[in-house]
Image (cartoon, one colour):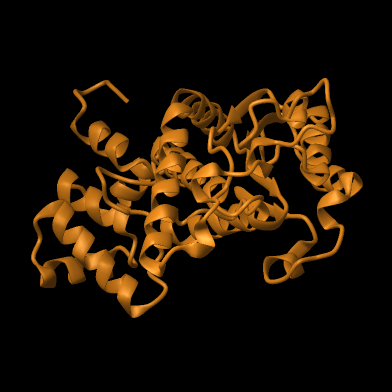
Length: 307
């Protein structure tokens, strides 16, 4: 959006010349064209990875101090934030309240449109006002101008939080509230203004990358294994056994037995098996190293006198 002209349309509202005959195409041609546009979203995310990496590192610093990450959005953007936050709890055994998704209009807006919710600056301010210096706020707004998101970022920054805007507008009006402005060059949508398409896809990729890299940075994985997973059903219990076998070389029966001794704690089981220590020593090492398996194992094998 041209900040000198408040009536200028953001890129997401422009007409896409490549799709003007969309309704005259056969189904396969429509899908191929949509898929081609999806590739634009992937490229747009690739272009902002250096900025995203800095945000991950800043978030990890705050996370280690006990801070939290909050996503703020309306409509598709808000739903994507809530989805990302909710999926971290079982995947990485993340404590509630550490990564939180806020959607304009509240829970009702997750399944249906809530009239005028995205236009409420005050609702956004109320949502962002609880954040403090150890927190990080990420505003998600394809247009870069959603009032709810602006209110949230403004209040979060006033409280000392680090603020980030993720939009598809290189001249986003809300950038003035952001310490880091991540602008995704997704351009006009295949269906004019339908930001659930490329803009939404790009936001989802940014959130996937951000939250996964954050969880890696704070020790919620080991190698490329999901060692913090919470086994809440039979499928996940079997997955923990399989992960333990892959990580340690134990057979299925030995993995079951070891997980029984560690009360199902996969990280403790890995440190016991690979560090050749007892369960209590494994728990102690993981506690000392914020649950990071790699650091706990490094401590096991460190020369005498080193932590």
